[in-house]
Length: 486
Image 1 (spheres, rainbow, N blue to C red):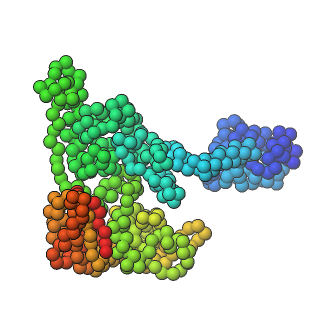
Image 2: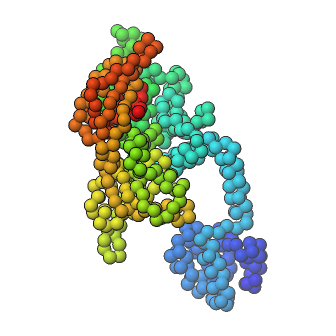
Image 3: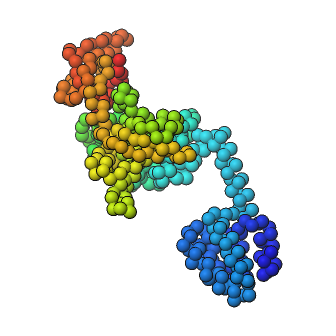
């Protein structure tokens, strides 16, 4: 007991040495050290910020004021030490109890309603990309499917449908939730959109803006209306103009030569470029979402990486062995360079593979030799030594190799392409022409064409050198159902 003031002693007794907060902290400062209300609030804020430098600045003020009030120096030092200790983070009983109840409630919700819980948490952090990426990985760990953004299904916030999370339209970069409510309102009023022109007629695209529409296209939100994302992306200006013309015609008393007001306005001709290659498609999606949602750039390399004995991040973590050199593939997400005390540069590089996100340390010699390979968006294979520290895995890098070079010479025994329509053959032939000059292993190609309910195998003459990038490009050709190795 301090003997300074009954209120102070009652507070200290009640909390049993746990720091009191806010008004109670201010009262101690006023009664014991003669703080003004404004000065006491500064002390409270310094504790709340948990910045040691600010608490250090408050110590001489507190001790000086306590001495003027006749408080023994040792006792004043003891009380401020208590304040300083729990500025680093302490609660009073009522505060701790409230947090305990909230913690229990959220734990119960996650255990019993994980889909709804994650959707609500993601909505709370709608524009915090890093947190959304963490939630996405947690959903993967729990086996919860996340449906990519879709103008015919998604809401402005995250939603739940049949045990799956519908990705929010408003969570995309440079896209506002309020603008996305215009899309949802039009869909609720008139039903699902049938094509891009129906979408442009019913939604005032000028109110949404060019940049948000481009992000929707890059994220694949129009895939249900037009699967060629590049075509939608390059058509945004045309669609905005068509939307404005339709709205003007609908508001006019005149009737169009082509039909009723607005709805009869003839749709414009849209560009018809070839869609982005799978790797480009994922890069564009990453730019809109902030992480890889529908796939990962390394997915098509998985068989080749297995044959090259390149491990996945999750497998290394599960094995839990420290100091055993191995190789790991990844797509570079970010690089932060630092300078050591001796003046040499090193870097922390954040990468991802289909199983998670991890960080590696790259020292000066390797950084100097491979800085270009470690730019964001590049795919690499790293020679690393993992160091296990509790739940954390740290990687020290011994070597860097571009992904295509690392799998160079790899080939499956054969490739079977399942084709829905014969017109895909021309595009496949063009990709095979590229494959003739590409490095890799020889691959014999077999195409399967559904015909009258049967499958007809057509063997392509000769063999081809088809690396993973070309196999991925074949998969993206319209009319190709899927590609499998054999």
